[in-house]
Image (cartoon, rainbow, N blue to C red; front, side):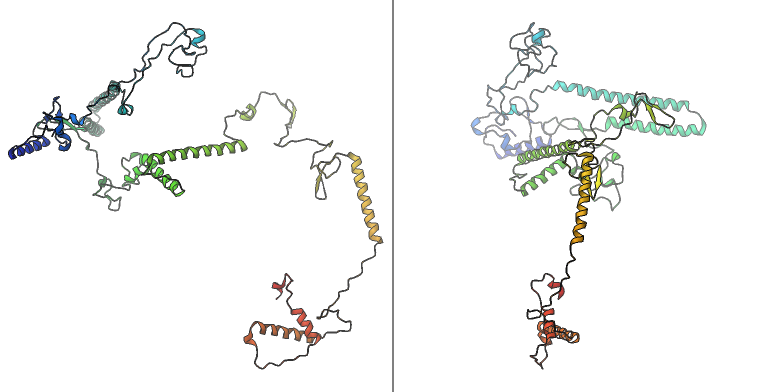
Length: 536
């Protein structure tokens, strides 16, 4: 309650004041009126409605909550749209070269560019616009509806009223047609069945008409006209008879779960239903569509940017995160378009709008071509050979044939001079004869050299003894003793690798035979041999 200056009240007066406030909140008593005759909402808290003591308010009022210091420099007026000031008869110096108005230049002109501007023709001079400047306060600069004319919304209301009127008229015409068909239809049982159908459809249409009159509003009576409790009249009812609760859409116990505490059903209760006929597809459907999906993508981008080292936080600086996301999308689109343009520039684009020749597009032309009985062209069109994208029939260095027209001994060359060097000059038939003569002379020289040379002597393999000297000619090795020496050498090597196989009673023999030395030489490891790991 908006109270005046605090004065002493007895206990009885204080109790009556509280009862009066409760009655006003319940709508049983009229609301309190301020100095201007306006009703004060009884639900306003006392700390807001009570005026400070230093204002010395004699009557209840809410002026202390309003802005009472107004700056005379600020204004709430708005631009006079479409207003014109002076209309000149001839072109003036410094005016717009296109339309002739003095309030703007040619670059800022919003009229259609004329073929010859008003500067040269001196005709159709446009009037000067009304230029206004306002100094708006903080709220005026940020007022979205500043300058809005409420009367401009009247045509929207008229359009919807006309639509409703046309709809009701159409329904009445349909009802009259069905009644006429019912009166004219007297064809026995078929007629009876048709009458039943017409009556049913007529009842349905009448029900629809009644619903259109009653579905939006329901009367709610109030005892007293008050600001807090409302007034006697009609109050909009947000629910209509066709509304069905979420948990009644699918009565299967295994269908989507309904949480009665939060009144939410996240899954789709009717997943097999046609999507075009659904009016409810679950709460999760709203989370993956519209602005919810965009907000989710913005959060994901902020997380990924923070992981990559950017100082971005969606809750701490949402505007910064949104601007970063917008710049990221712009750069991404630029990169995509740049990559696409690079590929198209390199490989071409088959989907361009280049006009194809008429011969290729329709497969026909107006040229007259004459054929013989076998299908060969007699006159009118010369047979064209298919051409590739590479240069053809280009002869360089005085050649009369192209490179690659001749092949010999796994080498390409020119057919005209049979040369295998690409950058060579053509020598013609003389070059071919000289090359053949040089080849014959070379073959003759090779044959003569092979005939005069003596056959090379057979190389005698030198056998070296174990101690490094040559093996004497009279040294003869017994193959059986050599095989026994090889076995002993293998056994000795196995004992060296594994001492457990060594026997206790060892008999040592210091006598070394040539077979033992040969076996040692054959079995020893050559550290410089690259195949040593595969031999032993």
